[in-house]
Amino acid sequence: MLSVRNLDVQFASKENTVHAVKGISYTISPGESLGIVGESGSGKSVSAMAIMGLLPPTATISGDIDFNGQSLRDLSNKDYRRIRGKKIGYIFQNPLAALNPVFTVGNQMIETIQIHHGVTKPEARDLAIDYLNKVKITDAHQRIDDYPHQFSLGMCQRIMIAMTLSMKPELLIADEPTASLDVTTQKEILALMDELTAETNMAMMFISHDLAVVSERCDTVGVMHLGTMVEMGTPKDIFTSPKNDYTRTLIDAIPKISF
Amino acid sequence: MTPKLWFSMVFLGGLAVLGALVPLLPFDPNAIDPEAMVQPPSIVHWFGTDDLGRDILLRSLYGARISLVVGLVSVSISLMIGVSIGLIAGFMGGLGDAIIMRCIDVMMALPTLFLILMVQVVLEPSMLNVMVVIGATSWMGMARLVRAEVLSIKERVFVTACRARGIAEKTVLMKHILPHTLNPVIVAAMLGMGGAILVESVLSFLGLGVQPPHASWGNMLENSLGYLRSAPWMALIPGVLITLTVLSLNFLGDGLWLLLDPKAKESHVKRS
Image 1 (cartoon, helix red, strand yellow):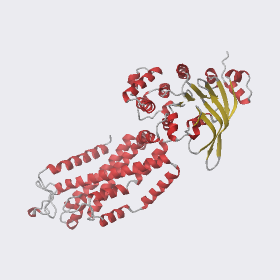
Image 2 (tube, chains in turn yellow, cyan):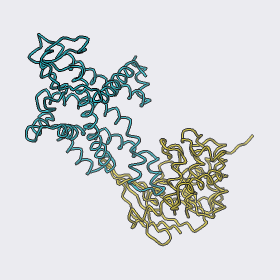
Image 3 (cartoon, each protein chain N blue to C red):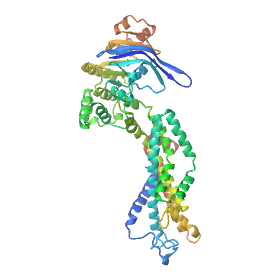
Image 4 (cartoon, rainbow over the protein chains, first blue to last red):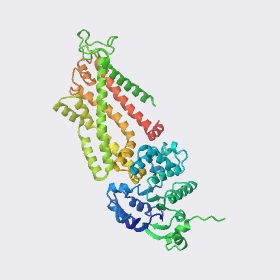
């Protein structure tokens, strides 16, 4: 479904050029989930943003990004908008920052639903409430008229998930969806995501710095380091016989509790 | 709500209400009364009369209509131009932004009052011209303000998130970015209105604004020039009104800034 070949991203500024992603390749088939692990600045998010076509104009991109046999890099802005959200959903790391603070969450959900499903406003509102119920927001029919700051971070991430899923994407890119949440909320959100993705059988690209979280729920795991994909394989292969030093460092970094 | 804000709201509100209602009264502000020329304030004529025996209170209120309308209309024009150009420049960024900003720099270097005088001399002096020219020469500050806001807002994650949901660029700009720029714009509009009222007074004073016999604060002042010693109220009353109106608008801008911007409140508390 998604195939990325030799994706290379550079950011040019007057002083120097930053080579953020150095020729990485991967594919995701329908219903499959790919996890990408790496430290901050390893190029995980940049490569995901490249798929969305949302890198700033200072970025120079080369390589191929094919989605359902269509080259995303050749798309016009107008055609790209039909892919964004509708075909490829994106969940951001900080849910509170990803919501516009001056509009109610309902307003933003309804706007999104109306763009992609061409329904009337009351229908979109009903759909929005349905999805808020799905992500277990209590009193969804009332809370839909609340502003983002009236929700906790975990709730905001549920809302972002509801909003993203309401567009029924074929591929979901989750960019460190739990990195800004505390551990218990993290667990709830992950369980919710597992439940909802299993229901819809959508493909997923899960970006995280936590090898354990990714290995638990992805069919394939890719390890990124300094812009290159240093290792890729099933979670079992990666854990049992890591070929790369950096992967070994990551595995050692998983806290083990011993008494 | 500070006392300054209260004062300016009451003063401007009162002036607007009186200005709106005064044409309903059965008095003609241009009626000449040879019996009552240059009279000091009295029970019949609260603010006195001028050299043609016209009631100064009545003429002041008609002048308030002119000043407030000129202020409102010219600021609306400058808002429309300034906000649109600022939004476009900030959102485009890059070369387009640089070109627009350099053009604005050039515009700002033009002597505005001289330009307005020229237009008024070449064309017929008319209220509409005054308002359009003031509006068309005072939008640059607004544009810079909006551009600066847009430049910072468009880098925020929610803007990227909007795009990632497939929302069109135009909607992102008009619906999601524009509201964030409004607070400083409202404040600047208040200050701009004070400026516009001053410019209109200057023009009328020079005889290039509101034409006699119609009353405006500027031409009332001009009228009073010959009577500064014998009838100081003729100059004092429009002068004080201009000062208080512009002052109120500045207070209002300041007060609104404090009310609307939470960061301003913090720094204000620290200062005092």
